[in-house]
Each structure stands twice: as structure tokens, then as C-alpha cells.
Length: 107
Length: 115
Image (cartoon, rainbow over all chains, first blue to last red; front, side):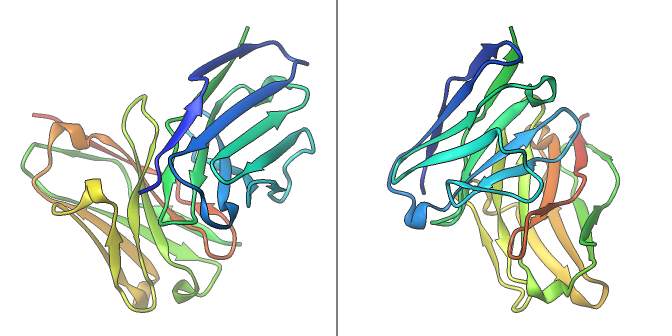
């Protein structure tokens, strides 16, 4: 089983700032099958990024994903008020598993 | 459009069983496997496993073997999650999801286990 570790646990930033979220895998993720999700209270997760760096349909350009192997990053270039939420990475290259999440909160 | 519609909230006592349904529409049911994801209150997402909608064969994540059963009724395009011998720690929102041709999630079903 691939274990995903996200950091930081909580990230406090202001609107307009840049956010960098990390996801580290316990072993290489096959084919870089790594996705990022956003979740807001009371809602199902929403896919942002798949294949480590491809934006899902309708996702704003300020969201970008990068990385390969065991180290992956989600970057939000300029935070909008609606971006403050929970973020999860998920690998789907070897069965599936989620990271424990990063809470992005308003500073 | 693709939709996954889950059954409503459940309140159960410890030791009881519960069956959550996930009805798919907007696509051919057997074209995409159904996954189940658990989210305990204030906690993260846990992938529970998936069921092949063509063969009916389930696969469970290590933490979800024994009391958790995935099943199908393809005649009504519906997947089911049954949990037996419920424990207080099973209190969570359970999501079904389909990932094969996009990324689609049900609205979630809250299962509360309390004496």
C-alpha cells in the first residue's frame, strides 16, 4: 500500500498570496497517477488535478500541479476567498489511497 | 449528465447492520467501477475499495475487510455498501464514486452509530 503524507497540516495565508501544498509518497507512484482534490464543508471532494499536472475540466488556471515519483506539489498562484478549504492528494497508480489532508485557512 | 445518488442518513445501534445504496444514471452502469470512500467526523478521506460493475468482483482496502461488503444490482444501476456488526467508530459519511470516465461522486450518506 502506498502511504501519502501531506504537509503542512494547516496553512494560514491571505487572499492574493501563493499557496504551496506538498504530498509525499512512501514509494514511487506508478505513471505519476496522482490527483488533487478540494473539499468544502458538507460537500463531496472536487477533482482539481490528475496525472500529477493536468487540470480537470473547469478548474481555474491558478491551480497547478507538479512533481513525479514520490514528491508532488499543488500550487495555487493567487488565493481567492473561495480557495480556503481542505485539500487531499490521492494516488491511483497502485490501488488507491488518500493523504491525510491540508487545511488551507485564512490568515 | 452523470449522477450518483445515495440513500439517506441512517441512525443505527452498535451491533446492527446498515446498507447504503448508490444509484447511477447518465451513463452505462457497467462502463465504470464503483468506489467507496469513508470520512469520519472531522477526519480525512479513506478509500475503502471498489467493485467491478462488469464482473461483480469486489476489492477491499486492508482496513475494510470482514464487516464491509460491496454488491450490485445492475438491473437498477445501483451499488450497495453493507456494514455489519456496526461500531461507534463506523460513524462517518460514506461516499460512492466513479472514476473511470471522469470523476463523479455521490452526495454522501451519513451513518451514525450510537446507543
